[in-house]
Length: 83
Image 1 (cartoon, helix red, strand yellow):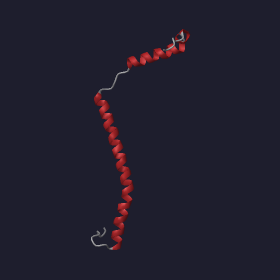
Image 2 (cartoon, rainbow, N blue to C red):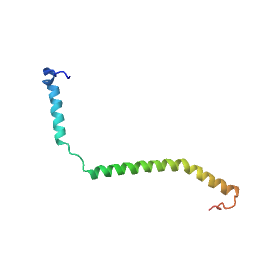
Image 3 (cartoon, one colour):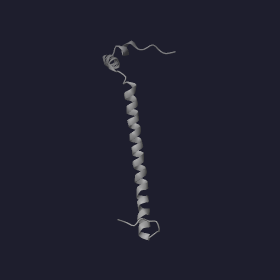
């Protein structure tokens, strides 16, 4: 199956320092409460929706305003007379 690990590699000072640092970090880590995780997810979703809305409006906006100006200038019945 698996080969036994080399004893000299486990006694390597750099490896032992990394192992100690990892154990220390895991011992100090505390998971965020579910409420905080949910709030972050909702904020991210709102940001994505706002970005999508801005993109859609940026794409559609010039087309609709151009059509309104065209109707006003052409005298189409029902077109609003300007201010």
